[in-house]
Image (cartoon, rainbow over all chains, first blue to last red; front, side, top):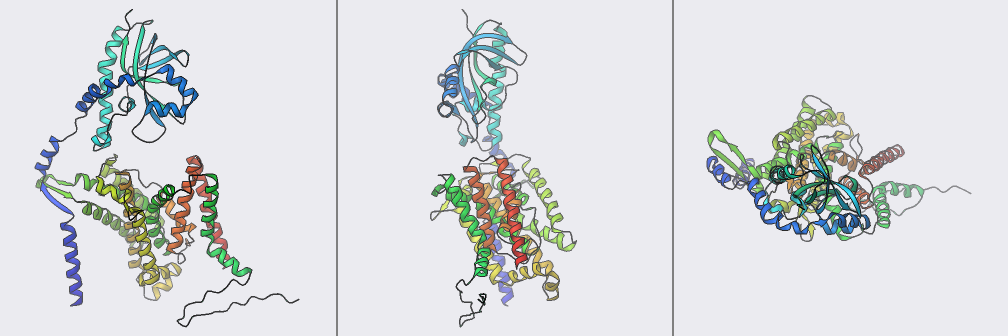
Length: 211
Length: 347
């Protein structure tokens, strides 16, 4: 009798737990509901580009000023001008500058810009546009808009695709060696292992200045 | 001049309990030193780190350390039970990852049965129970292979380490499962009565394990099996059953550790828990549990886990490279084993 009571209590507990653990729905209805709320990285990226990135370009720091600040007070420069979604040493900056187009290569162009008080080559990526620099440089992406990291990464991919297809081609078509060029773009720097001689800019705005 | 002779007298209270005896000579001092060696080591460690870093003795850092070690405590308690039976469980890190991933996956995506046009959604309770059940089942499987096929625990659990990691990759497709909701995040990041929830969870587990090892038949059987398996068998203990239970508990506790990790990050990472088994074994060994079984305590393991946690925290605060941190930890474990061996010889 005592044993039977034990089993009955155990069964009741299991049923109660199961009842509060799962719920059943029609799969077709769940899928239909999910489809309406599916994240569209392309439209998010387009909206982000138009409403946040473009208006925020005026926050870009002059490459010359940034280099000088990084040399004099790295911590302060990172604190003032860098952004990143995660923690760690990799941080992103939105920079701007102008200079003479010194070389046009298959994967990039080099601009001789004033940096750290002297004319320095700044590499602008035109072919391999990857990473999260553009997405994160302004610090305007809200993580709460994303339910998973794939969606977040897809936004970067869409932004980079936009750069490859909309920013780079008109510039490459018009630019000649020796032209004066202005640029705004994002760069990635490692706070712990700072290398200022290997900066590569992911361009957001790239124009040949007509004299 | 006659030499001093220290005579050890057995004194007991009327109820049979031992009466605390004042220290009488060098042998007593040595015994106490040995008994409290982990505590002394922890004290010295805290003192040194506290002197070198002004951030160490802060309330925030204290809670941070407690949060971090709570996962290791969960795993280490299970590992202690396994080691007490003269076994070892190398699969706890992978089980932790799999259970965290299963909980996260069920919570976020549920289960789909397209043939039946059925979707099974999981509440937080359901997902958590499923994770713990998975850990328990895998632990039972470990125990079953060890007892049924006489596979050495090292090999059986090494196999499970790979199996569980592979299953985690299959379940997650190699991607993290993130944004699991604020209710679930509360498990790893919340506070209850001014104490972090993970600390409560690990505290309850420690309390339960102390009661089991000290006050129950199961606890006595575990020590008996580790002390002398043949004698335990001859005295009528169902060795296989106890071992399966012990590995199942280790699996369940690894699963709870997985829930804490997943909740804390609000994301199940396919690579979570890598080498956590080593930290757990280190905590067990530093805590004075003999790897040959039959000797050790849960509280010793907790102390070992705290030492590992404080050491990790201290090395980070002192900006020591992660590579050096591993070297230092390795030497600390080695030192603990050497001291333990020396003490065993002395006894």
